Each structure stands twice: as structure tokens, then as C-alpha cells.
Image (cartoon, rainbow over all chains, first blue to last red):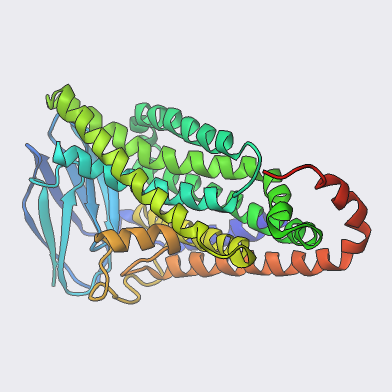
Length: 111
Length: 287
């Protein structure tokens, strides 16, 4: 076990060093209000990693989720989350609010 | 109410599939029912606690706390399953050899039953905490007791039904292969959980993706479909995996299979000395 840690720890550090520094990445914002995403359609660059900031203005929690680009994260009332996405191939990717699937729908257009 | 039922169903289903595999893998073990119920109970309590503390968790690791928490919980489940299957391969075989197959595996299984109890608890905790947060939101939104209770009943009932279907389906496997199959199911389950953990770490920018969308099988089966979700739990299916997920998946598979083989061979060599003790240990009546 100890030996495993000795091997894994430097690997992890190396890997972290390899992740793009978060501040250099392009940022896109979404707002959830009355269980609806604004904007409903977000244009993002294809082939680049970026981050999406989701702000929840409702009084209830929401889960920002996409099975198309594989992300899920809870957004608490009156707070924001950051989710790292991509690089994506060009195309259209649906996302939704898992707690309000009938109203909270949107998509990313990667181009 | 349909919205509540659907979300509860999706979450319960995921946990129920894992619980079914664990139930099958511990088939015939004495007091297994208590262990599994205990695991579910602990999971429910844990789910409420996690939901209560979710805001604190979310703020950890400069905003990547949810991802870190999920990954840690998933990876600890991977380790417990791993320990169980490797242990089974070293002790299960020599026990099974001198008893009828069920009996041997029964004895072998009970020793790491506590680990599998923890796996059940973790599965329930993960899915349950999401249900709690969702239901809290619904209650604040003024859905009313009837809608809430009806939705929960339908969702839990439906999810549990699917779990039972898997369990009774597995029971039809001939005894000769039964524990081999359940062991493999546990290995694939662990590999899939490791892959999901990697996905969370990438989402939180805590690990590099090593290639996003390495392949795209969504034309065949999407992640969002019921089948896609089921296979995601059972074998770690992902229509568009990141490279690091594949690495985590393959590494888990490799480690567990190598561990099983290695201990298997070692235990076969040692089994003559173990024989008398083994026979004593398994001489009680079987359930």
C-alpha cells in the first residue's frame, strides 16, 4: 500500500501539472432562473478546453448535467459552480437541469 | 409527481443494480440479509448527512469539492470490491474444492461481507444524497405531500423492481459458474466505478483528460438512455469516454485480474496444508 502511494503521488503531481491552468481557459456563463437556462444555446469553440460557470438564481438546488458531454454537478440556490469541459469535437451537445427536466434544457454548439 | 417518480427511479435504479450484484455475490451467506439491509440503512442515513453537508463539500478544493468527494467515495468502493474479489480467489477455491460449490463460497464470502456492506452503503449514499437534495427543492417549490409521497413510492418501487429482476436473473446461472460470474460482475463494476471517478476528477480539473471523446459510440447507445445508464453501472459503459477514464478502467481490470490469478495460483499450491482447518471451518449446516 505504502509503495503504491510512493508511486502514485508523483504521478498525480505530474498529472496536475499537466492540466491546463484554470485561469487561462475561456469562460462561458449560464444562469438558471425559474428553472430555465439562459441562454438556452451557448456557442463554444471546438477543439479547446473551456469552463462553464453556472449560476443558480432560484431558491432550490439544480443539477447541471449533460450525458452528451458527460458532466454533472449540483448548483445550490444563489450560488455558482464551475465545470471544465472539452476539448469537444464540433457538434451540438444537449445539457439539462436534472431536477427540472421539463423546463431546464439547453445545448452547446461547438464550432 | 411524474417528475419526482422519474428522478427517484433513475437514482434508485443505479443503486439497486449494485445492490443486486452484491446480493448475488453473497448468495447463501448466513445473515446476508441483515448485512445488506444494514448497508442500505447506513446509506440512507449517510445520504441525508451528505445532503446536509453538501454545501460545505461543494466549497472545498476551490470549488471542485463535489468532484473530489465523488471520486474519493467511488475509489474507496473500488478498493473494497477489489479486496473482496482478490480475497475470494485466494480462499474461495480451496474451500469450494472440498465442499459442494455453494458451501465453500458461502464460507469464503462471509469474511469480507463487511466490505460489501460498505459498498452497498456507498451506492445508496451517492444516489440517495441527490434524491434528498432534489426532494428538498420540490418541497420548497410546494409540490404537496401527496405528489411527493406518490412520486417516491413509484420511483423507489420501479428502481427496486429492476434490481430484483437482475438478481433473480442472475440466480438462474448454473451453480457451477455462478460465483465465477458474480466475481466477474464485481470486477467490471469496480472498473466502471474507477472510470466514473476519473471522469469527476477531469470535470474538476484535478486530472488531465488525456484525450476527450476518444471514441464516439453514441450512434449505437447514448449515455442518457435507460440501457446506456444500466450498462454504465454494470460494466462502466460510456459512449464518449476521456482517455484517462479508459486508463482507470483498464488499470483496475488489470490489477484485479492479476491479483486474482496470482493468489489463486498461490492458494492452489498451499491448499494441502490448509485442508484440515478448512474442513473444520465448513462443517456446519448450510443455509
